[in-house]
Length: 162
Ligand SMILES: CC(C)(COP(=O)(O)OP(=O)(O)OC[C@H]1O[C@@H](n2cnc3c(N)ncnc32)[C@H](O)[C@@H]1OP(=O)(O)O)[C@@H](O)C(=O)NCCC(=O)NCCS
Image (cartoon, rainbow, N blue to C red; front, side, top):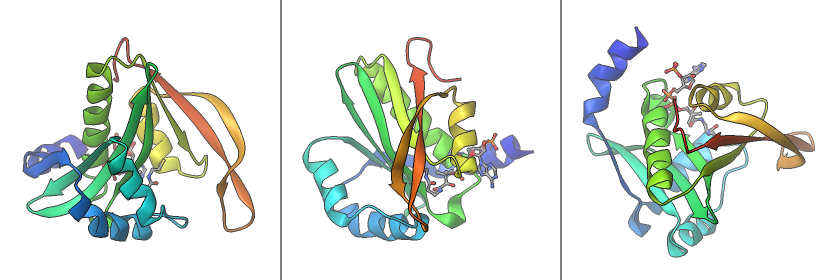
């Protein structure tokens, strides 16, 4: 059933580079999406240093964005966030596949990311793309009460995402 919904929806979605002028909208999505959002300065720094920054547009509305760094054979997915009303339509999966393809094209051998163990939706998305847990970073994230660990996930890009 989900795949039918995705097929109806995805042709209208476009992935394009993020620009400076996108940052105010990106920040609004970020603040709605996370309890502990990135600052505007972090997004501007990501653009300035040349990280791979992409947004997903659906009929002229920004549905979400993703940011990835690459270097020394490793891609790091640093942020993926979708506007709430655009979730559950396969857009984050499509964005992840786009980023992973870019990483492979740039010669990266592995992709890494961190995720809160409590974020079961994101965890399931990454697992279905083939990411596997390779470690934990203790107290990595801010949390409502103290700190929360991060699970470190890895995907080999030699064989590609599922
Ligand atoms: C995590 C997030 C990016 C997923 O975006 P999305 O566009 O809704 O994801 P998709 O529609 O591409 O779904 C991909 C997978 O996510 C999982 N998923 C999505 N919505 C789900 C839900 N409501 N319940 C459980 N799993 C769900 C499923 O595994 C789904 O795969 P499927 O196609 O087999 O159902 C989105 O929920 C979000 O922006 N959350 C806030 C920010 C965040 O947590 N980012 C990740 C930080 S590591």
